[in-house]
Amino acid sequence: MSNNDLIVHIPDEEPHDLHNQPTVSVFASSIDPKHANQIVRRLNQIAPLENLRHVKRIQKKVLEGGQIQLSVVLCLAYEGGDQLYGVPSHLQELINSYQLSPFITKVCKYEATSKEEWQEQCKFWPTSYHPRTYSIEGITGFSKEDSQSVLKFMQSAVELATSDGLVVNAAVIVDPSAKQIVSTARDLVFAWNPCKDDSCYRKPDLFSAQSISNSLDPEKPLHLSSCNHLKQSYRSVACLYPWQWAEQQSHSQSSYYCHPLRHAAIVAIESSAARDRHLFPNNEGSREKYLELDHESPSTSSPLKRQKTVKDDKLNGHSQTSNHIEDGDKLNIHSQTSDLLSARPYLCTGYDIYLAWEPCTMCAMALVHQRIRRIFYAFPNPKTGALGSVHRLQGEKSLNHHYAVFRVLIPEEALHKCHT
Amino acid sequence: MTSQETHIFMELAIQQAKLAMGALEVPVGCVIVEDGKVIASGRNRTTETRNATRHAEMEAIDVLLEQWQKNGLSMTEVAKKFSNCSLYVTCEPCIMCASALSNLGIKEVFYGCSNDKFGGCGSILSLHLSDAVSPNKGFKCAGGIMAEEAVLLLRTFYEQGNPNAPKPHRPLAHQTTT
Image 1 (cartoon, chains in turn orange, red):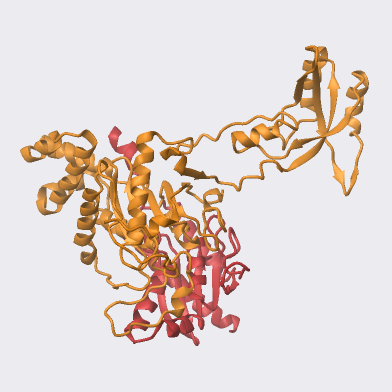
Image 2 (cartoon, chains in turn brown, cyan; image 1 turned 45 degrees about the vertical axis):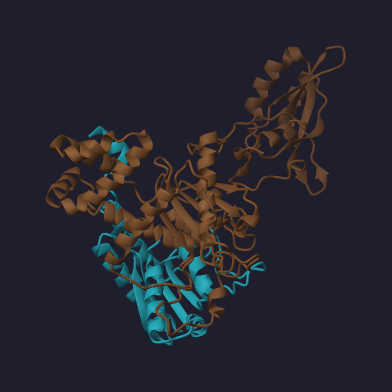
């Protein structure tokens, strides 16, 4: 099995049972190939197939001896209870003039969502199939390099989920263009330190993002660092048991609080928002203001540069950019700043998130709000999962943002694996 | 709960929404009520925090969780508290907030206008209803309370243009051309 086969796209709609796709009855008739064009043109006028645009009007069969037989769909056969009504009267003239003999057949009701579905559909009656053209990478498959990177980030999410003895859900938000980790989080339902002040996020947040991204050298395989007890229960995975918190014995003497809603994805979003505020402190978004800020307060801009340099080195594989920064001349500061400006994302636009478990409804919707581009998860969440298990938010048409969802097939043993 | 009381609490939620508007945030506000008293309020802070999950409900919930635990309440007691709380919010809770309210086991929700795009209390999903697969108990839900006022605020905000939306709205495309 190649890496690519381990990443499975979870479609927007529940796939139909391949061999049991919904069908509707139509009236059809075989026709003389000589009249095909005229009949189809006439039918498109008097009986267009409004809700069956994927159904081809004509079926072509090659009979034994090479003879070609054409059949045409005349119209939907309306079913009233168990009874089929006759061919509508406005088609009678056409039927008479070409001496057609209508029969009832079945066509597939919905457009195929996959090549496999389409092939099955054509066994009834030919349909057309247009593979969805998403702008999101990966739906039509991953390159070898991309799938390696996906597996690596997923491993790091699973590692994080098991890193503290207690198995919880974990989230890793990644900027795929730079292959850089933006934020990481474990469920913090039972270890929440309420802190309204921005300052308490900043440094640890940046440091952790960088130290983890350093350890994620794409050349080195990741190891599951901690040695966990075998077969732990998953009762502490917040997205699997979102109501579990109420049964928790309180640690009222300890310094931390319980927060029932601090699931890994929510915390990771919060942390990426804190990073955004820290990297781009000016909310106005105007270039002039950024520039002023850059000149006036070098202490603010230096972590930005460091961050950017790391990114560029990874991208280009050489250190030219960092030399330029050290030169520090105005031109380069300017170009550096415009790079940064163009690098500022709106929320998590363009970012991916890796989760050990399929997120619950709350987390899945939070990821819609924050404009995540792709979600990768390793293990399904049959009772509260919102990306195919119970709900399917990626297919909710009314939402203003849609991410692509993938499951990465990692054996469950990865949660219990003990590397030395 | 008389309808007069309902209106008094919704009026307070609308005041929160106006505070959001004043801070150039999408104007949605809420209050949480226990035993006929307002115990927390919240308003949208998505722009300020750059965290699109900081909806009014989430803000108010955080206030309560922090306060109750500072007062030494155990999680069982916190759960019992929530099961006695009513939320008044100017707009139907979104799918995320409705799911959060269900996770907390809130007693009931009163909302103003419905939310055709994201609503989680009947418009898109019905997360307030209990279902067979999960231990979700669901919560009582009533909409359309002072909906005109809530809509008017939202309409005013969007007609002005969202002045706090990132400028330019799509930074990548715009900034490379300027």
